[in-house]
Image 1: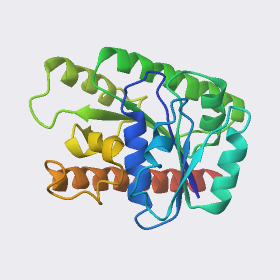
Image 2: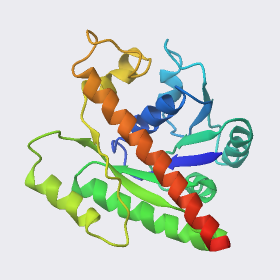
Image 3: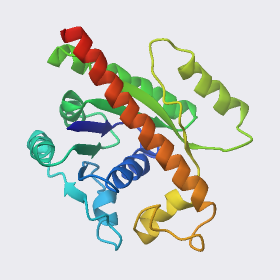
Length: 230
C-alpha cells in the first residue's frame, strides 16, 4: 500500500493533471483510488465522462473532517491511493501529507510556482515534526517545453535541481495535447487514438516514465526506512 499526495498551494501548477495521469497509468495494472480533495472537484467531473479505468475508484472528499477516514478506507482496499489536494495551504493538506508515503509537488518553471512549492516544502517539514517521521517528497516540473525552454525556465529548474536539500524528479511532465484533452473528452492517454490528439506516443511514453520513477522512489524510500529500522 502506498499513499501519494499531490500538493501545491498555487492553482494552475499542473497538480490535478499529474495526479490523474499517475492514477490512470497505475490503474492499468492494479486497483487504485484517487481522492479528489480539490474544492473544484475536477477529477470527479472527469469521472462522469466515459473511459474511466475499471480498476480506478474516484472518491470525492467531503471535508477536512473526513480526509483521514477516506485515506484509511482507500488504503485498506487498494495498493495505491493518490490524493489531489486543494490549491491552498490548509489543515486538509496537512492531514493528507501526514499520511503520505510520498508527496509530489508539481510546479511550472515560473517564479510564483517556485515560491508556492517552497511554501509546501516548509509545510511538509512542519508536518514531519508533528508526526515524528520522515515524509519523502520531491518537486515535479510540469507543462515543460519539450524544446526551446526560456532562460527563466532553465534558471528556476536548475535552482531546485542544484539544491542538495530539495529532491526533484528527473522526469518532467511535458506540455502535451493529450494531457489537456483528458478533461475535455474523458478517458485516459492510453484510450486516446492517434487521430484524437497530436503526438500520442510521446505523451504515453512521458506518462510511463513518470510512473516508473514514482514506483522507483517508493521502493527506494521503503528500502531506506527498512535499513534505518534494522
